[in-house]
Image 1: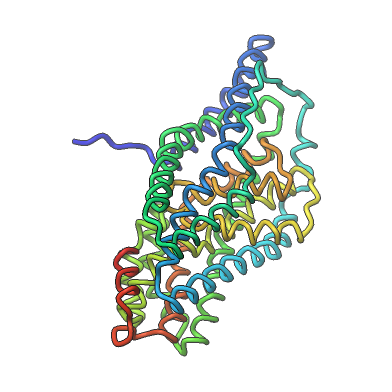
Image 2: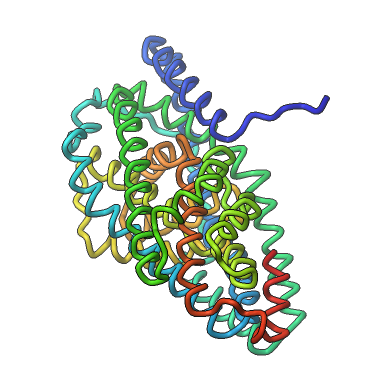
Length: 407
């Protein structure tokens, strides 16, 4: 029998539990506890530097080939799906900002972390700076320049470099960042426990999960009502037909892995074969409504409990950048989260500690984000089918190839 591996969710649960237990132990261990806590803080600070270093490379490495591949696709259908997905993701973020912004303050106290702390701080023994090769916006601009350039010129050499760079970045994420995340979160939880802040964070986490989950369901209903109105279809029947995709995404927490189920659900909704075969795999990479809502709800919770003042203009700026950077990130575990880390710091001004807390909120019960993502893909497919289906009579060879590539 093969070995069963723990999923990332259970690793995060174990990390949080260990962090709480060790934090209480360090709190009552006197000088020895301070030594242990400072060792943990050293790892925490170092891993935060590694994250800052890898994020621009992740954006450059993953977005470049994604844009290059999309650029070779078929004209109007491609542009329509890309624009619909982008505006839908932005709409989900704005929806989450206003709804979660109204709901969360009702049961989360502003500045609760600062009020709960005992004032104890721990300094690392060594602080190593690893400057990133460029900032995230520069990486995004380079990704667009090279991606569009590859698509226009058809340069196979540069495309091969981009593809191989993407594989190296994915390998680094899977072998270094993902295994290190539970330890990183454990050290952060340990520090918060030792500083007397864990009670606030634990209570907040459950409220954020419940709020985010509820908001994804409400937004999906609104999305299907809009799509049904455009397509002339019963939105509630179409949404019900997508239930298998939602439940599968909820259980395996991956948008890309649910593509076959999403295709079957879209077939039940009467979406033509050509449209669903092109739209669903593409949306799995560019349509992130669930992840957007979860990201905004988690970030707002951090802003509230730390007593920060982040205006809507900055959140809107973050939304526009996040929706672009999330392209192709689903190809990597926690890719959407990793692609957003740089913007959380550069645009919203969050510190490393605040980002690590947001990560814990985001990664706890991760499945409801991908579940909403794949269900929302069906709404985009409904609208696309209204204007482009059936395509079999007028699909160009380039479109056929793009569809096969995306499968």
